[in-house]
Image (tube, helix red, strand yellow):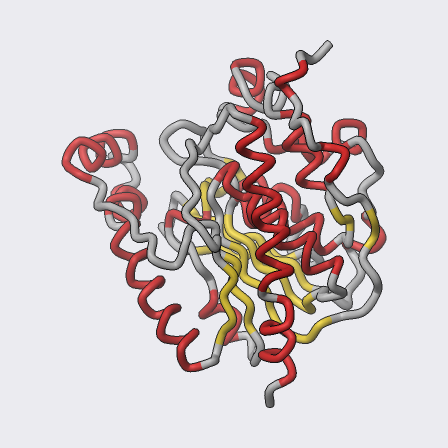
Length: 306
């Protein structure tokens, strides 16, 4: 039996419903961030509650993990699972690490019996909405876009996207090795433009002013040692912060120009990637839910503009 502090005390206040069939033209881009993805979960639930169901969803790492529930139209699915299972060792912990070779057993979250409610696969796989999980190929150091309906197993693509380098073994797909998409591409808004989407919503998991610190000598040595047989991939890890910071600068300019709409935490979130405080995680989720409501009318105005 779970102890009281293992499950978020406000779990019963997490909404549970199905989104409408209405489709919002445009693309939503979801940043990663491990358990900080609960902010994304809150934003996505808020969007669905406001009948904003984007034609295309592209997610990186945790963005992909929470994005598949959005495409399935299941409000509250990702939040309830994570706020109930943070202390489940089959999902996060030693048993998870032994089974999945990663701190998170991503596949555990794909099982209906663990989700607590049947996954709406029929809606998820409908061809009228696109879903893309971004991963990085260890062998080629290239960004790879796994798309439902175009790859053999989209959930294996999501697993690859959300598998953390250094502490996790790579996911093998068609003979190649893949890890966290954020290694090479944190914010794939350029992909949305290249695909011809005129309306692009970017959901960040860090406040607008956040920038990543450089790797430092110790981390650089670790990356180059662990991936000495894959030097191009190691170089991506070493230079990831610079790439992310440049993307943030460009995104800020695109937002000023009105080309994209950005939803980011309205106040700074301080947390650990493997945050153990479920009450803090619950607050992060509800901050996302509130921010979606806060920006709703401005977002609708952006979507209406020619």
